[in-house]
Length: 262
Image (cartoon, rainbow, N blue to C red; front, top):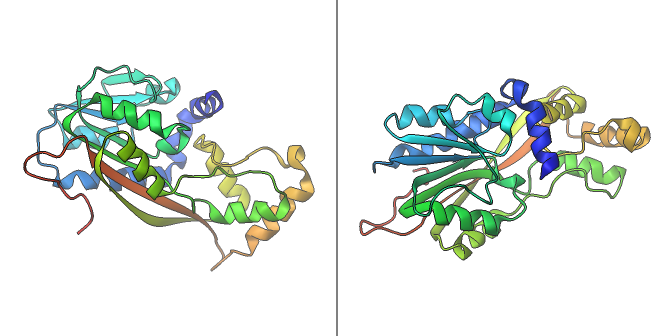
């Protein structure tokens, strides 16, 4: 985890300039709150980073207390939220039953222990509290994974958890009737190097971005050659499987609110 924190701290100043996908997903996640009409006093933006989601939440809930929590201190420095906490998501420095909504955009894929994470979120949520999040699924960067697999047998791209397994983890933590959905978003690049540069610029420990001299020039070139086979209309695609999930700590008497797109 320390290497991930270090990477995000280093990338914090220029993060927003390269976080095209992260901005889009944060916006789509925020839109899923359109059907929430209940008053929320305290909202936790978990893995808030530089504030891509926090800024939207402040506009949507102007009278609520928005807590921006992240483990990368430098990222929080660029977050304009008034209530900022630098802490580990697996050990939330918040009281039991103190938060109305926990919302998290593209953070959970960096947490190796989802069981602990969901248990902590369940602990801090009030009864009838909502968890809403986005994360990456297994098909994320599938072109890069397949291209590297031709070059060697090492792991260069992180393995992401299937959304059904995430749902099971939520049930195990005590959440009720988790709802999962998925969509595929594709970014395009002129070169593989442009993709790797973008990933490094946002601090994402998704891929091995070491220089080709460290991993072998031949392997690096073989990977690039394989990736070129995906080129369409002059562009190289980079696929992201974006998973969305939500659940309640307890279903209220009025029943479950459906956050799925109608």
